[in-house]
Image (cartoon, rainbow, N blue to C red):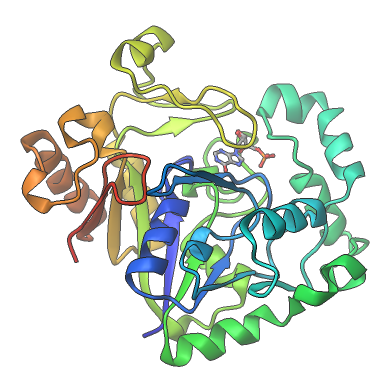
Length: 335
Ligand code: IMP
């Protein structure tokens, strides 16, 4: 046992949240912890009864009623978003936040919205994350332990993560994507406000590297990008609509720019940075509509088989999960 670090290879929006939910249920994880930047993230998963779940702050592992969910101390916390999710998902008894998390205040959101460089040039989500991190770095941020409303949830998440990972499974859910990393993107300033690699995710939750069991890198079969910055093999809006594969951001509702194929060099670079031991290949139904809703390995079609071989070659790791649609059960688990 130990921790499984779930990170995105490219520009995010690849279904890390759904992968985390799937593993929490299938592998009965007692603890799921959010790593990554903060509330700029948006995970969505459709439950098998049709309910659409959207989360920005808490890991989606709560979908297993036995799983405790937590936010690591390197993640920015917006107390209103945290409280709304605890309330909406009914998590009062099993949600935790590290007291050392820096807080996002309404002024941070306002400052980003008023900043033309961020809003117009970078295409930021303007959710206050960069401004809050700047205050944290300047050592003038308020922390979760300073906010009375968060008191019932505050704990030392790093201690909990390491204690649980010693003899059981911990899921660490990263956010954004490797190529949006502040210090590893070649596309600065078209980045987010922190790194999004496996090492960053470990650091965000205070996980000792000896307790890492796997790095599960999520690869979106047809990559997307929201906001500005280059996207190799970008499809025209008309082509995206014609193929019926349009997507919209969870946080901002913006249409996602979509590529017609993976960039193999960029994928290999992301694998170099993350050292994955496993791959989840998501949105397979966007490559071949015949895969939609499949959960049986016998349903894997020739084009997706070819893609699996290519991705395994480029990343050096086996594809263990294939996501085939928005519902939790639209997943082929090859483990
Ligand atoms: P920020 O992190 O909100 O300032 O946004 C900076 C850049 O990262 C913009 O291009 C955003 O669209 C992108 N970004 C931030 N969060 C996400 C995410 O969760 N998924 C995909 N792109 C994101």
